[in-house]
Image 1 (tube, rainbow, N blue to C red):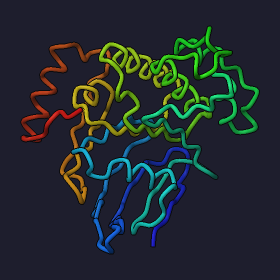
Image 2: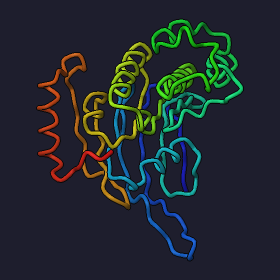
Image 3: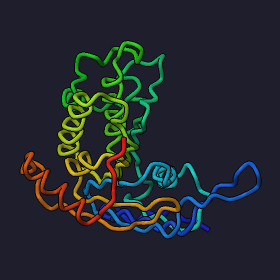
Image 4: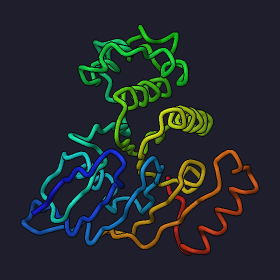
Length: 252
């Protein structure tokens, strides 16, 4: 049995996945998640870090309600129905819709006519609202995907390695843009990543997972405001992280 619960707009995200398995083609079973428990506070930005293939994306699919075949429970922030903004590894924009149409299509009816000038400007998309996805670089398409997720004013924002496959400069630029717009529109956020440096830059808390079947092996809280995280501070945080989680690799 599993359950998705709502506990009010100010509630914490609470994840308690007791067990998640997949059936293999030869009739066997692969256990992906086992006793996976953690929480994310209201308006906290958390990153989930773990080895490739350990089940991070499966966990996100469970949170999104796309996979209900698991044992456990999930508590989401939200009063009646949690608004969930999602940014995936691929932008998944409709090619026959403009940037603005893609964004507005995802918005609930009460917000459909909202003014998006500030959001588009914050993400550097002000001049590209009438562009089609085929006219965008991958970096700009990723910005449009972030705009689509935030325009719905989500109770929770879920991100699945949104900067993967981008060159280092573009990825870093998008991290700064995401932080800027998230700071203007704070919401509970959970991002999956392989990148320790990225997690240290973005998050208030890093949740570290084991190999499959994934469970939490520890958390790394960062209480220092992001504007104080200069190169030296981030290097110190990296050293502290590696001391706490010896053997963790920064894998692409």
